[in-house]
Length: 140
Picture 1 (cartoon, rainbow, N blue to C red):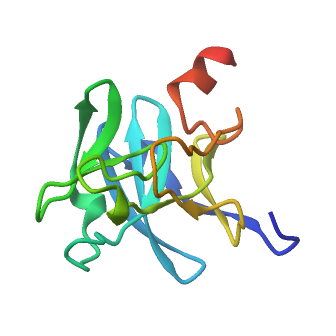
Picture 2 (tube, helix red, strand yellow; picture 1 turned 90 degrees about the vertical axis):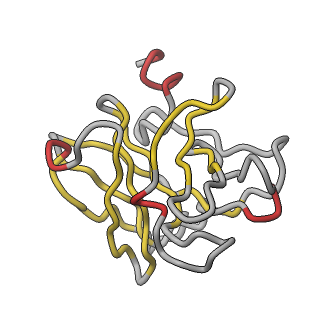
């Protein structure tokens, strides 16, 4: 994380309907922020297959035990934890640190930890602050 990285408030958690996403402009990027139960996940909003910024409008679900969003255009599934495209790993998206503080959803702007995941053996390990996984919620 760089010294210039800052948490940017996106909205109230209550503003995001459970099991859906919203789009937010964060540091000049379109970021898709999803709510699953009371946890949040953030990935690039751009669908790398179509080139359109639509992932925030995708359907959230579970595919083979992995929490995913299905692109509304060509239906590829992207992991909300790693950004990996399950059907075409070379079309994966970046994940972004996010958290909920006092009921407000925040995304880390300018974080060098955000990265594109190209294969399933790589994963972004969330901290308890990011609430990016069910495991971190269970541990806290």
